[in-house]
Amino acid sequence: MLRALQDTRPRSGLFPAVALAALVTVIWTVYIAPLPHYDVEVFLRAGAAVGHGHDPYPPPGSAEVYSGFAYVYPYLMAFGFVPLAWLGRLGASVFIALSTGALFGGTRLAGARDGRTYALVAMASCTITGLQMGTLNAVLFLGLAALWRYRERPVAAGLLAAAVIYAKLFLAPIWLWLVLTRRMRAGAVAAAGIVVLFGVAEATSPVGTHTYLSMLTVLARKEAPLGLSLTGLLVNTGVGFGVATWAARTVAAGLLAACWLRFRRTADERVLYAGTLAAALVASPIVWSHYLLLLIVPLLVSAPGPGTSLTAFTVLSWFVVTPHRTDLTGFVVGGVVVGLLAAPSLVRVVRGPARRGSPAGGPVPPRSSMTTAAFAMTTAAFGIAALATGVAVKLLATAHGDPGRVVGAYCALLGVLTVSWWSLAQGRRPTPAAVPLDTDHSTRPVPTGGTAT
Image (cartoon, rainbow, N blue to C red; front, side, top):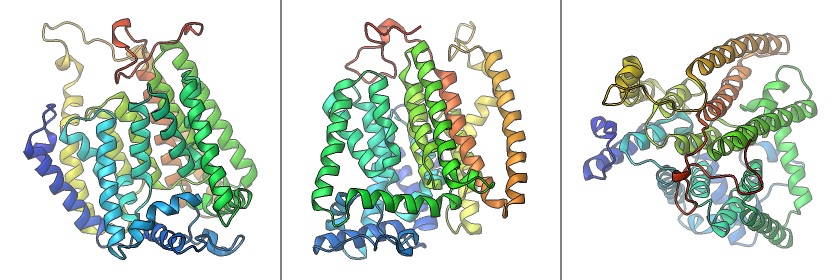
C-alpha cells in the first residue's frame, strides 16, 4: 500500500487509488470512529433547528456561547445541514465522508497528481483532528484550492471568495488578495456576494448581525487563551486581550505587506496567496490545530508534488499537536505511516543537490531568485531569533501561570511564519512564455500601469 502511495509518477492506475482508500480506512478505524464528533453534531442540531423553524443560536451573553456545544456560525450555513440532520446519527458519518472527498478534491485542484501527496495531506495531524471533530476545514480547504484554480474566472472566483469568507470571517484577507492582484471584477463579485449573504441573514436570522458579531467577540475572548492563536499566546504571557488582538493584527498586516512587496518584485502571486492565508491565521483570535490544514493549500500551490515542504509540514504537525485521544496504537500507526511516506524526501535531502542535477552534469538551476547563501543565512538567523523568542515567551508565561499552553501556540505561529518565509524564498519572476492567463499557471504578469519594480 505505502509503496503505491510513494510512487511519484503522474499516473492514474487503480492500485494507488486502492492503496489510498486503504489508508483512509486505517485513519477512520484508528483515529476517527472511536471518538465523538463534536463540531458536526453541533451543525446537525442547528440544521434540525432551522429545519423546524427554530432558533439555532444560544441565548446571547450566556455561558453556552463558549461551551463548545453551541452553534456560533453564520445563520445561513445551518440550512446546509438540514438534509444531513434528517439522517440522524448517520449524518455525522456522511459529513465526515464528504469532508474526506472535499479534502482530496481540494488537493487535486491545488495541483497534486500522485498518491503520496494525497497521503501526506491526509496524514497531517491537523487533517486528522479536523475529521475527528467533523469541522468545516476540509470544505474550506476545497474552497480555497478552487479559488486558486479558478482565479482567472471573475464570477467563479468572486463567489468562492464570498462563500469562504462568509463561512469563516477570519478569511476576509482573501478579498484583499483579489484586489492586490488586480482582479477587480472578482473582488467586486466577492464584495457583492458577502453583502447579499449578510443581508439575507439579517432579514431572516433570529439574531441580528450586530448581536452575532458581539457573540463572536465574547467567544474570542474566552477561547483565545485556549487555542493556538498569536492573540492567545500574548494573553497567556500577561498582555491584555485588546492589546493582544491589535498586536496580532499588526503582525498580520506586516506579514501581508512583506508578501505584497515580494509579489511586486517577482510578479509571482503564489507568494501573495500564501501570505494572505498566513496573515488571516495570525490575525484571528481563535485558531485551533485543525485550522492549520488551510496552510497546505499554498504549499501545494507552490510545489504540487510530495516535496520536502509538504513532507516537513506533515511530520512537524504531529509534534505541534497530536490527534485527539491518540493512544499507543495511534502513535505507532501514525509514526510508521508518516515515516514511510517521508522516507523518499529524506533520501533526496541526504543525497544532496549534486545528484539531483541535470542529466548532462550541469549546475542545478536555482529554485528561486534568492541565492542559496542568502537563504541559508536568513534561515539561520530566523532559527536563532525563533529559539530566543521561544525561551522569552515561556519565561513570561511561567510568570503568569501555566506555560504549557504557549508552547503549542508558539510552534503553530512558527509554522505559519515558516510557510510564509518559504513562499517568499520561492518567489521568482516568471518567464514570458509561461504565463497565459487562461490556464492554471502559478504566476501572472503585472498588468500595464503597475509594472513590478
